[in-house]
Length: 189
Image (cartoon, rainbow, N blue to C red; front, side, top):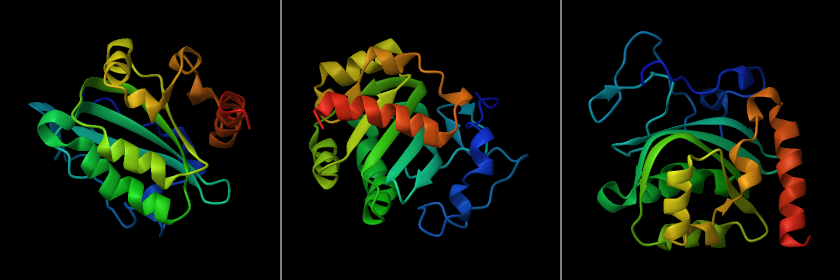
């Protein structure tokens, strides 16, 4: 797992640690010292810790004008034991929402498992972004099914057309525009 880096090619457009409005502003990273692990497996030092014991992320891109953020995840999303959604909501999502972000693209291809608890933080997040949306993209099928089986898909939109989206070949703006068009159709806007 230590070889899995967050997507790097968009750094020419955005770096969260250099964005004064980012929850990770000023964070310093090592290329050589591995300090974080998921269970007994070290992970690449470029992933951001936000309080969870098993889930890490990287804000790949945020646009305050178009009001969207793209976030990539790695690890086990465990609301049952570690209340990961609470840490995510309080430490990452709330600061973004406070700065006007109301559209979220969550990239979940490196999420190994999902363990649900109640949906109150998802509901709160959904309520905070009145005219926005949250989509889950490229989640592994068994992980996506766990979200759906626990009715989290009421708050996070999952779709087969997002599951094999080759987002790395696009710029963040193009990715957002393509997703936004699909979401507007889905929401009847």
